[in-house]
Image (cartoon, rainbow, N blue to C red; front, side, top):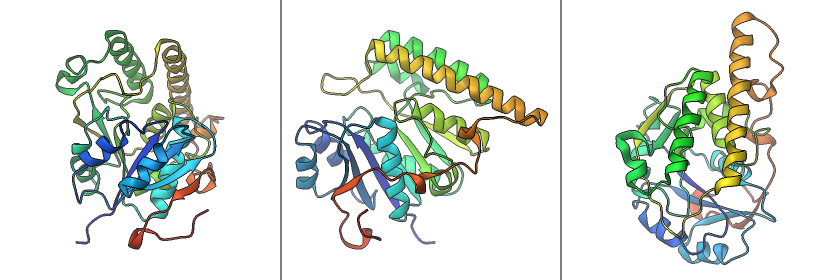
Length: 277
């Protein structure tokens, strides 16, 4: 059986100080392409990526975490990825788990795999602030109830997606901020895509990037809004009533409609399958 193609997508902003450490920790041979999405960095992020020999596509200005994911996943599909694994380049999550994350997707068992900091009690032990832990648990409970899922953590940034998930979910119209992560899970759940999890240790330290209190509050309300829309959509689908929510309509625009980003460092060799946009 032909080996599945794995593309690691790294959405980042001003990660020059942690990018090399993250890339070096990805097990050799576990990814066909490592792709950094530079979301308008003002530091030496692109130069560090060049020195590491990884690909980089850039936004001219900061467009948001969700926007960076859209750009990265679009290009992962264009590069022929069977699996796209999102790794934060600030070293918050363990890059050593990339092969395990990808392996859970490749047999067709799951279309979405989450690296959970909650399984096995790793969140608080790894330094997650207690207020974030409480918010994480409360939001995850509300989202599970609204979406009919049973995942341990909705808010991990360590994820793997199958080609089917990224090519069929209507992602172009999703939010461009951190709430993109909840939105894509809501869409996957509604379409009946299988979601799996594995335990991932938390890793909190001074140089990592993390959401602060006030943006965290806005993020929490955004996630609750997504959960509410998902619950109403599920109810409407069961009763045959019109839903009015394009976010859950499979015919809404997918990643091919998303056009942001220009190549700073194109992939090299056999990985490159089309000219830069």
